[in-house]
Image (cartoon, rainbow, N blue to C red):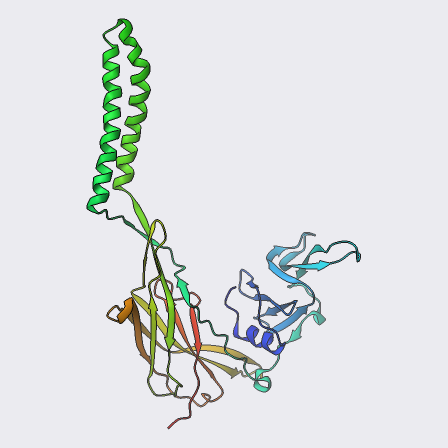
Length: 335
C-alpha cells in the first residue's frame, strides 16, 4: 500500500476502522483507501473527502468508459441478484474533477478530534526494494576440479567428432564415420563454448536483507536531549543462486507530526524531519548479529506537547522511499 497522507490516516482513524488497501492518483492529488468495507476518497489539494459505501478501490484512471475526461476512480463492489444466485462483481467509475458540489464534505478538524495513534511498522524481516546487485561466483578447489573434468569430457567428444570426420575423408566405407562425426562434433563443440562462457561469467544476486530485527529506542524521549537508537538484526540464510548481506548503512530520522494553523483559518497535518543520522553497520556483536547505532536530537518548540514523535528507518539506496521501520516514541516531560 502506498504511503498515505497524514490527514488521510486521521480520517480513517476517526471512522473507527484501520486503513486497508489504498492507491494514489498519478498527480498525487487524490488518494483512496478501503476502510471498513467502504472506500474513502480524499482530495489532498482542496482538503475535502467523500465516502463511497460498499465498494473497494481498484485504481485511478484518466477517463471513464463513457468518455468523460478527468481523473476517475475505479471501484469494485459485490451485489447479489437473488438469494439463490452467487454474488457477482460490479465495476463502477467515480468521476472526481467534475463532481457535484454536495459530493464532497470537509475534513474533520484534528484540533478537536486529536491526532490518530502512530501506525507503527515493526517487521521481523526486511528485504531491500532497491535493485539488487550481482557478483561473480567464487569457486572452491573442488568446484574448479569438477568444472575442469566436465570441460575435459566435452572437449574429448568434440575432438572425437572431428577425428571421425577426418576418417571419412579416406573414402570407401570410411564415409560412414561422417554420419557419426558431424553431429557429434557440431553438438559438443557448441556445448563446450557455451560451458566455458557460462562458467567464466557465472554470477549470483546479492540480496540485501535483515531478519530477527529488534529496535531499541529507550523508554521515552525528551525534546532537546539525545536519543540513542539501536537496531539489532541477523543476516538471513541465502537461497539458491544468491548471497545475502546486511546493508552497510541505514538512514535514521526523527519525525514530528503536528497540526499547523494557516492564515485562512484552515489547518494541515505536517510530518517534519527534526534530525537525521546515518547508522553504520557493526559486525563485532555476538552470535553473528549486526548492530546499527546512532544518536538523534530535536530542538524544542512551543507545540511539542501536542505533537507525535516517531523514528523512521530508510535504506540509503532509496532514502526518499517509504520507511521499512516506523516506531513511535513516548514523550517524557522536560527536566
